[in-house]
Image (cartoon, rainbow, N blue to C red; front, side, top):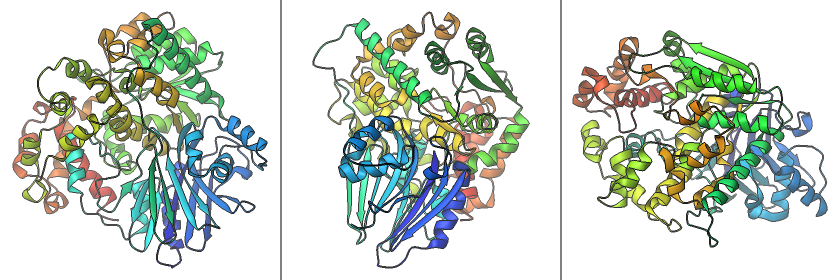
Length: 593
């Protein structure tokens, strides 16, 4: 797990090594264990390493194989690298390190662009072929690892976060009007290739990109998720047994492939609790677990310790529990915003940031339960969409998901930012893609392949890596996701959702954990906005920078400020927080860049 960056000149010039140094410096927190750089003609790389596999200096990056004429920067973990290593050895390749990075280098040399088809794990990497003068890049199927880039006529730059690209300079930071519409409609999800900034784009999950030194580009989608029934029908019991085994294997490999101990972020919900149970079931001893909670609010509890404590007691984990006061949350909020590669509305981003700080003092790798709700239909809006009988597919989806309908969006922004209903157009295209057997199949596939990438997955990566902590997400294991996508939605949505996981958990977890209402990482102060948090948001939205930006209609801002707790989205988020967060992110990350 690391931070990567690089520059390829497209005009015959030399890369800006000063820019590489500035980008690498901005990635230090992602990789506190080693810094490295490399250059060859038109190409330069920078790398920050978090040492997880092969802790020796032989696995430092950029990794250069002079015999093959290749150089690599890589962020992530390849869970099947031992098997690939043996395959490559049989084909005549020899290795000088023990980790997964070198396996990627040899795999590219052996199989070319098709090497990504064989990689199982989370990854974003770039390989420079010194002989062919080609730069090859790829991102994992689920988008767990980030890959941002900036392209001009003169050069191509890439990095693990937007802040690194901005540090290099010469980036168009005007707002992308299409991305802005997505930002405020899809709960801060801006699907690739766009970001909120015109000059920054991102490689889509399951895609690779090949660039020649003369600028010719070839992008390839190497993976698509099939959401239709298999040719051989399965009984419910067969589905449950297959899912149980796939998840068991996903959890096991994410614990096994590491040269340092692996813990669990234990929220108290079904998903993370099930990870603890499966790790214990596989024989893991001395399991470390970590939970965080916040101050209660009159309308909502600030922690789920009553559930996580039961799991800790049953499996006798070495548990660490942190209770963080609201004053600390507000004080540390600027740091969390600085760690956001893109502006995030999810109120639990700050929770993950503060939890990761504490966890990183104890351990370097954790498993986390993100993805279970999307893969197995655990959110409350899925049954509502299924039962919605009126309208087109996008209308059925929008009524239960969109944070704002298009007309409200037009009232929210000033005239310069009003335009078409870009989000409805995009969602309609995604829901209409072939390979989904029903409306709910299409919804769940879109969530797993698109929406989740820029909401919980990006949030977990950014907030953990801000503290040099690697988060592994077994519910987004490729084999598990592909199996679950073919499972009938009716089975997944049974008993309010996530039925396969609930059935699996019987006997492994207390019934009170399994049958509890669906919880969300509690951060009440950012949902029920009042007191110091309201003053904080008011100051942001009344600031000279906000007014000069001219993005928001003042009438809309004043409406939210007058009664913030009356204005929540369909997904129960604070609309005032949405406005304040984007503006604050721009002030801290863009205005001074």
